[in-house]
Amino acid sequence: VSEATPGEIDLGARRLALPAFLPDATRGVVRCLDAADLASTGIRALCVNAFHLSRAPGIDALERLGGIHDFAGIDLPVFSDSGGFQVLSLEAQRDWSVSVSGKGIRFSKKGEREDKLLSPEKSVQHQCRIGADAIVALDHCSHPAAPRAEHERSVAHTLEWARRAIVEYRRYRDQSGRAPRLFGVIQGGPFEDLRRRCAESLLELGYDAFGFGGWPIGDDGDLVPAVLEVAELVPRGAPLWGLGIGRPDSLATCVAAGYSIFDCTLPTRDARRGRAFRRGGARGFEYVYVDDEKHRRSTDPIDPECEGACCRGPTLGFLRHLRDVEEPLADRLLTIHNLRFYARFIDALRRTSAP
Ligand SMILES: [Zn+2]
Image 1 (cartoon, rainbow, N blue to C red):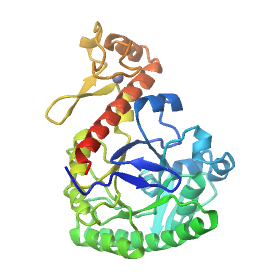
Image 2: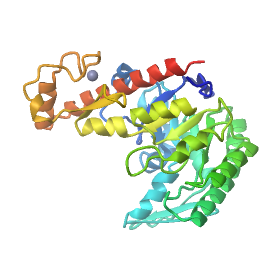
Image 3: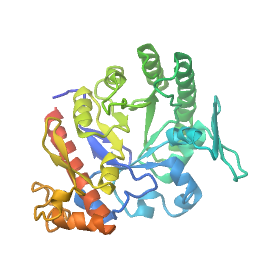
């Protein structure tokens, strides 16, 4: 039980009960699910990616189509990620060139003539014009194994961009009358003093909602120590978003420490790989590997506790068959199943963390 976890977050036009798990709808859709499927899972908010949406359908198009809620036909709170992390990850790909300076992140794709600058102002504009209920100031993410000097540079950029982002955000709010919630990201990698400086400076700039920046997970799949240390650096009760954190036992650990918002591709990606979540084991969950030979003749559901379209009717034997013949229905049913599991799991954490 933690008194640090707020019971809900005010997003301007919408409110969201916390803690909440947000599936990734990177391109504006939770893969394989329509709005009715999504509603049936009990999931209460989504996370889209501003960078991917700016490439398709484009920010202008999305704005003309009425924003993400009308476009996708969903009335749930939509969080957006700045896309800074994705732009930086393009660095590793041969057909992109990426560079970071105080101005922002400059990137271009080979074969495309245009050289684009993702500035903190443009990032705020894009996320606001998408119609997101919560947005993130552009941050500079460094690899956790990078030398200290690189983390110092990433904190300096993150703070400079955060200063400019909040100015742009206030301008947008005053002009439009819309007030999505703005999150600042705490960088600093494994260096406690850098993270502290980043958190304190964000507070001084006027930020009141925060996210953990950087790589939250070590090579072993467990949380890096910095994740829990960051929870000590923000005011008690402030919304704290564990960007990219998603293993169920990690959610439980983070909620106890004061985190209240999570987004991760894990449940939806696992679903498409034939891995279904179920309660059990020392970590509070176990996997059902649908492709296992032993399920071929199974007449059981994935999980007798689940009341979804995935488990009321379809047997494990049937789901295994669907995957065997590469029927897309398998992806839909397993995605519904895993999100139902996550919705129940986070709701159980909500009950135990309620003040
Ligand atoms: Zn199910």
